[in-house]
Image (cartoon, rainbow over all chains, first blue to last red; front, side):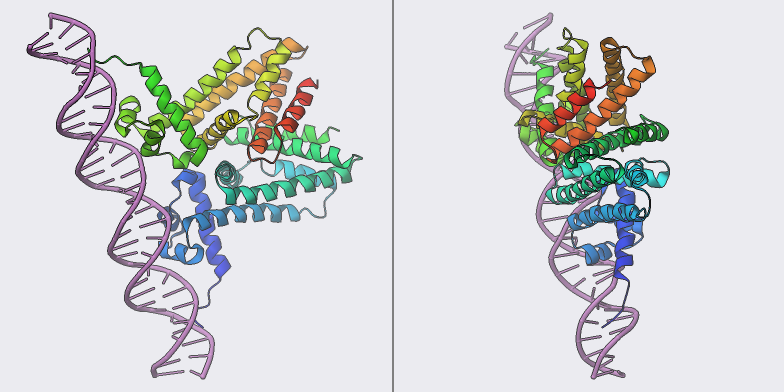
Length: 187
Length: 187
DNA sequence: GGTTTTGCAATGCGATCGCATCGTAACAGG
DNA sequence: CCTGTTACGATGCGATCGCATTGCAAAACC
């Protein structure tokens, strides 16, 4: 068998280029040619690793979710309250890298409304986040299970809304973080 | 001068068809031919009234904002607290019509990240909503000006996040409304 | 050192796109 | 009736799209 290459590395290069294209031109601006040009590879390579455009876009979505989950897992040895703060603040864009990431994330959120596959990936991630946040809340303070879940949902929904406002520069990152800190601190 | 037609009516028919296409296929699914087919008119007519595709899509955005503002104005003679509740709950999709409207709205929100013209329209609308809500809060209870604005921002951001969750069916409309009512009632 | 299998680059095709252009049917004003 | 203007339907063009196909270079295995 011939030519051993690092498949994961190749796939990652292409997915990263996909994210850049989405961040700059939105999901409507994604074409195999644009992504190939951004990654500095040929269209054929993308076809080889992902098959169709839809499969590529979906892979970009799952990669985004996986990266976020990986970042959260690195906080495993922190206190529950701090982990909760991390989840809330992590998506507020502070620098250009964070802005790119959350821009792509929002693009997928919008796509999920009309795309069943993307919707399923995001729905699973969201339910996971809600359950984990509810767990953190119960670890931090005494609450009923359903009360904690409602709290988690409220905090995450608020974080989403504030993230959007920072994204379109209607709100400063500092203000968003301050509001989230205040809400997390509340009972 | 020839053939007097109701320009506003013609434009409205086309914009409504545009909304249906956006709701069903997302903004990426919008093409002049699709919109023309949905409206039951020719492509030439759309070109005649809107010129380019970008102008059409932007007109759909301003029409959406105008419609929302018109709906709010109809509550002019209600109490401040009730008007505040209206603003918060109005966007939560309860029936199919509401779902279409908010689906289109979210599509524009996502587009605003990469489209300066759409961003400006939505930013203006959002600032107007924030100021108006802050005004309603001060009319309802005793608060400082900046405190009311922060409250308004928090409530609207939460409403956005909850709306999204209802839209992707992660949350029941009733739960979203209940959470918003609770927050509006809070100091 | 052939053989075979993998990893891709290149190319071609049919569909679809936005938009410019052209032609004309309808109708108000003279 | 005639003329001029408006409102549009029809058509065509060049660009771009996703994807299938083809061909070949590189390298593990005999």
